[in-house]
Image (tube, rainbow, N blue to C red; front, side):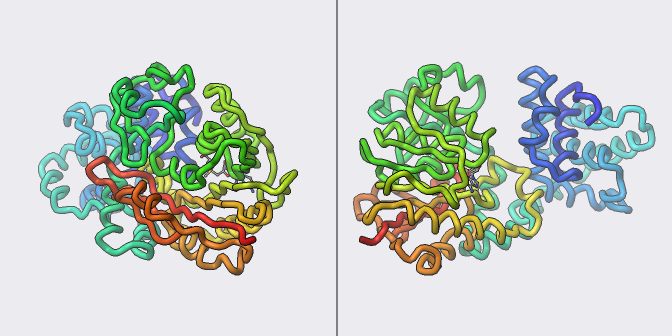
Length: 429
Ligand SMILES: C[S@@+](CC[C@H](N)C(=O)[O-])C[C@H]1O[C@@H](n2cnc3c(N)ncnc32)[C@H](O)[C@@H]1O
């Protein structure tokens, strides 16, 4: 990017073309695209880019009949301006004149392209509403690889419900430090207490200005992401390794329960965030930069949390760039590291020690299939099924034996939760 974007629409265009034409992630693009904007413009740019990416299938289907030579024949900026125009007008509640003018203006002095974008967006005024009403939004907005991933794992209705849930804004959940009264804090934060104890906050505003943030009494963590550490049931004084720890949401839970935590990650930059999170919450863990697939513990451990690197297909609501970047959904290389991490983790445990394997992924391969292959990966580990009381503490979630699955279409009346697969295992002995 040559010059920093001057306003929200230019920044949204930079984000969009960065993802779709340069195959970079929103996280990689955001610093350069957004740094020069005031907070409100920044938030609008992010909302417009996210909305366009979430609705890309519908938007392109709407535009296609208006472009005889196809969207691909246009330069990236014109393609992006058209997509942003439709997103603003039809999916972001921006009035027609503002949506069209701001999109046309993105093309600067390119008079011909401006004319084209203007004409296409104006002509859509006649037909878009009826066309959109007849579209299959869930299917159109889900790239084939993701649709196939969902259909391979869930029944057709559930796969479709998950694809629909991806279109909504993700909720904002926090985990409270143990010992705090959830109902009282829900009141102070204007939040709802979720069935598994996380609090769901209203979005918007400055998170750091909310009560309790400065004192480190809670941290942002999706309700599903809070479950793996809970399922491990950490006890005070236990020696526990959090093997893929950064930025540290689960480390904080384990440390807050009083465990002696070794928090490992192989990425130095991500460990900086982990240190910051520990400092803000006043919690302690031994932070170690290491490859968890080969690391050896100083002594046998009581428990291990393995929140393995994964395809992150359970977090599409939060990462609308992901479906457009992960072409083909090839999880092969991830399976290799997941298997190696699990095998090494098994060897760190004392006999009888516990392990929770977790991925924020919805593919069969990274979840149930991997655990079905446990005898080949880690013969010393066995599934540790949940008791009836534990099952009762996970209402509305998919609990089967020693595994729990969550996805964005569960708890529909509350707004869903991220997609996770978790398995609780125990070392024989
Ligand atoms: C899903 S994220 C972890 C999120 C974290 N547990 C939390 O709750 O905040 C996976 C992490 O695994 C780390 N990672 C990937 N391969 C690793 C390896 N071989 N050894 C250690 N950490 C690894 C990544 O750097 C990344 O931070």
